[in-house]
Structure formats: structure tokens, C-alpha cells
Image (cartoon, rainbow, N blue to C red; front, side, top):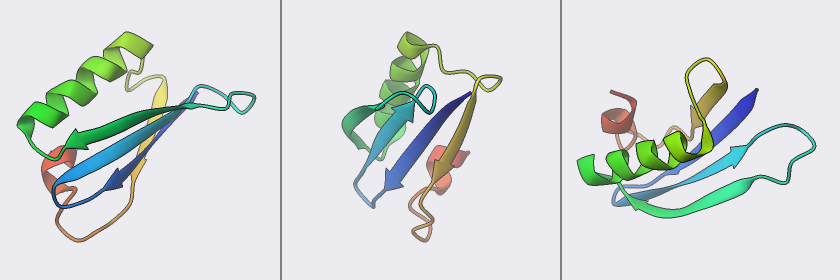
Amino acid sequence: MMVVGLDIGAESFAAALVHDVRDAGEVKGTVANSAEGFEELMRWFQERGVTTKKAVVCLEATGVYGEALCY
């Protein structure tokens, strides 16, 4: 099971991916909190084999800043 953590901000967000508990993980740098940034994140997921069947995604609840990404 993979775990993805998202740290959401008004203008940008960061993502971290852990493949399993023995893995130190991988961090994706700052991504724009916009449609273009969401597409960049999806490409990053695809390159790493992240799918809805293999991963749990969680994000920091910071008001409305994460809503567009969730949708």
C-alpha cells in the first residue's frame, strides 16, 4: 500500500509518497495549486504507479485551499 501526503497552501502544495513502511519515501517539490499543478501531480503519480487501488491519499485540512484538488 502506498501513502501520499499533501501539504496544501493557497498558492501551492507539496506531496510526499511512501511506497511501504521500509521506504524513506519521496517528496515532490512545490506544485501550483491550479489545474496545471493538478495535472503535474497526476503525471508524477502515473510515473510512480500510484493508483486508487494501491494508494491512500491524505491532505492537511486548510480551509478551502484543498477543495479544487479533491474534486
